[in-house]
Length: 164
Image (cartoon, rainbow, N blue to C red; front, side):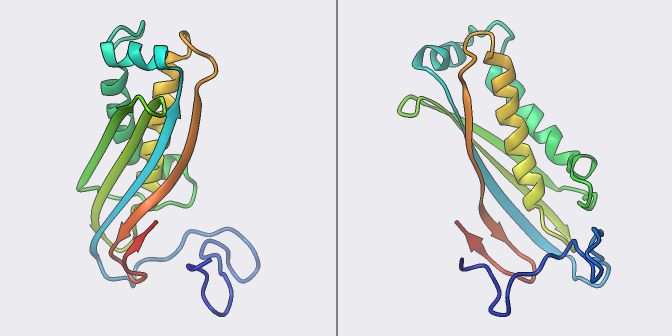
């Protein structure tokens, strides 16, 4: 894997005794950091048609999922034990219905000016938006699948630019 250092991988959240710890970022420079993540919610064409037409029993699936994703990004440190609470400057969640899947492509971009990155916030936003879509359409179809949640891009910080 290209991201593994030549002297081997290291886990920043594990101390010398092997115990979990929160990383000290107090000496890191505050810079602009941006992360984008993506995932997919796969379903039948009929269920996708319900979403697109706005006729899902629980209401506006895409609008609700978008707001849920934004809210989740803001609460990431409450969900992931060792994440730093961050004052996010921007969160966008885009959901694109795609008949070829069939399903929805969910993308989230998160921005902060600070000493640590926002990858977890972007991944959390996508995860919760996908789960919200599932929750809102499960009455119409139980076989919906959430797949492929991953970081697609990271900009800023010591490790620089990453693109999947």
